[in-house]
Length: 147
Image: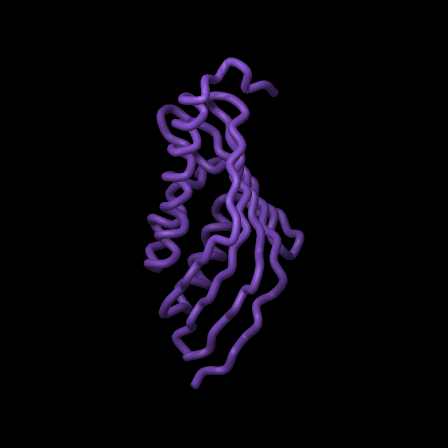
């Protein structure tokens, strides 16, 4: 793949669009707003997710698993440690994200993810950037008892 035909301004615009689409994932998770968090993921049989446990999920499994978890939370905080976007052409970009997360459960316990990684493959479908493939890498969280 070549990005030679993209001007620096075009590349920067695509990066901004992808970053904005991605921000809805982070913002939605932190607000515990599942609609906002998962709107950017393509609801299609073409979507594939590889979980940290090595499982393959389709769109519905992925959303259901995450909605179930977020519903156990009273708060959720994501902190970006590193983020890189690679633009491959006008309709394909990959966002690599290293982050940490802290979930406070309704039980008072906390789940701490000290370092995790995710790869989001974005495709421009119509006028929107959608995640068509997602891969997550993380150790299981450390569960801290409630106080």
